[in-house]
Length: 288
Image (cartoon, rainbow, N blue to C red; front, top):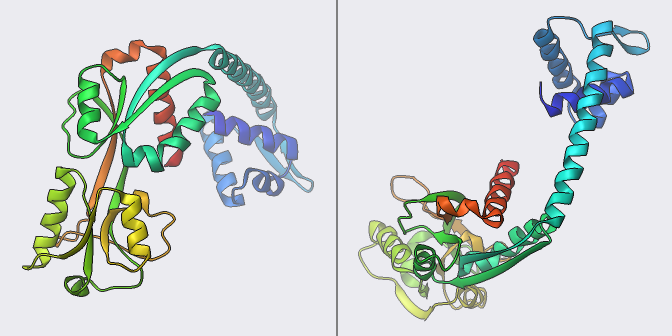
């Protein structure tokens, strides 16, 4: 029995109707009935009986309701105490992030964290992943958000694994890429090697580079203007209104790139670091 079961049982007690309780809990009646049966199997007794008005609770059911109310109240009190603790907690935290992640994803992550820990002061550095990696090694930052390609041997959490995509202003076939201008997004050596490898799997000739730029935003705008096609990470393409095709290797495996949150295990002695790591882990679990 967990907190979801407790919430379910208290709603059921309040509504005295499986139909109304299912609506309030946003579940189907069969799913709710199955959960009730699972509880009854767990306690090895009947907890409810059906009648013409809906349902009634057995003696054992009433007893369980009493305990559920007590546990729910205790849990709510705990949440309030933890909220006060978070609001009173202050500290500083140095985070280094790969520039592309810092631009497209970090603001939302940080905003939600600071809602919970409003008195924590953040020092955010953005740079190439190679430099963020060195900062983390040299203890200049406590947390590093690194793009795939750097072997961090200490603690790490997978933040995302997004596809690499062809971006063009209109639909295009892969066979047409050789005849169109290529807008080369000059990225780090690891990703560039992978892009070259993907290309060489399919073509013997080199792409016709029309423009090179180190800015992913500039690449997107050049593509949007119809000046060529590009290979870009999907993390940057949420607001792109042109044609996007996710890439795969010849084996059929998706061509993706991972982003990792990295830190040293001993840095968890800092409450600021520990709170951020825990927050990220909980956020990722809620997204599943």
